[in-house]
Image 1 (cartoon, rainbow, N blue to C red):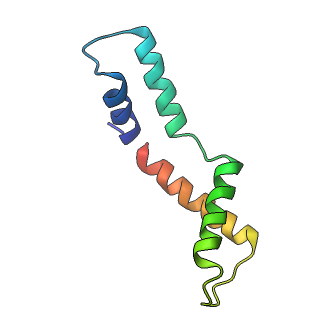
Image 2 (image 1 turned 90 degrees about the vertical axis):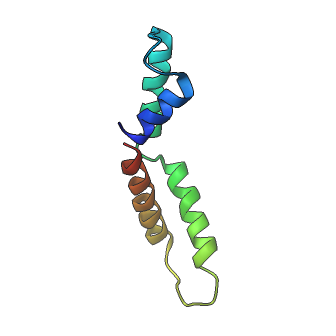
Length: 83
C-alpha cells in the first residue's frame, strides 16, 4: 500500500466500514497528495532554497531558474515517495 493510501485510510477510517462518501474522501486525498507540484509550490520551495543557500557567503549563487528546477526536482521526489 502506498504511503498516501495508508494515510487516507488512517485519516478516513478503514475498509471494514464501506461508505461511498468515505471512499470518495480517500480517493480525493490520494489524488491531492500525489498530484504534481503547482507553480506556487515550486516558487515557495525555490525561494526557501535561495534563502537557505543563496546568500550565505559560500559562493553558491544560482539564478531563479536553477532554484526552480531544483525545487521541482525535490518536490517530485517527495511526490513519488508517497505514491
